[in-house]
Image (cartoon, rainbow, N blue to C red; front, side, top):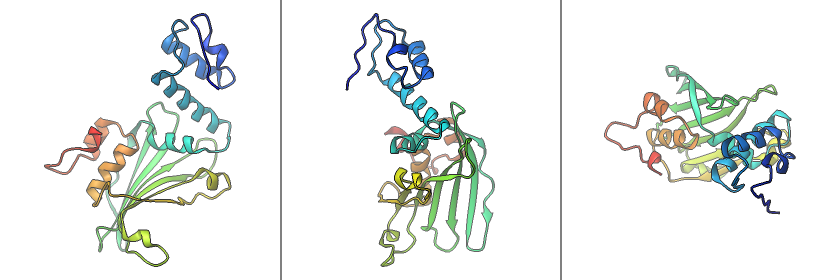
Length: 219
């Protein structure tokens, strides 16, 4: 169903079933006269607020909510701590907030000390309204393929799925093979672009390797 608005129609009235706050933001941004429901900025505001309201009301997760959590603009609030050397790998952890201050996250980077192609870079969502956390995605390197896990022979990305999440399973069950990166350095650049990290923080904490152009930011 398409929603049509004319110059005399209040956006707040038409989309009040979604959210008073969403309508107020849309009206503030564009005003009632000449309001275009399909405009990109208003659509972005609607999606962002719908995600916020859905999570606040503890409604079921959707794929759109998960995608928005992954891609919403973010800033680093606690810089990456020095690599914590463990038995066979190192791990670095950092904290992030969405730019609008609504969502909290942590990121992590692990690297195998023996096999550098075996790494994992993840984004963890920390809901304000419930205990625990949800790993939204992991950008992984090559772990060594097996009959049970043939994808381990390739770089691959794990993401959590809404159906499983709503059933109480937080396992990142969706697996996608990728050629977007092949090393830890290129995976980090891919990851910080994917999660919408602020350009200033990208350059400050994860600058491209010397001599390389930040190709992902050009996409």
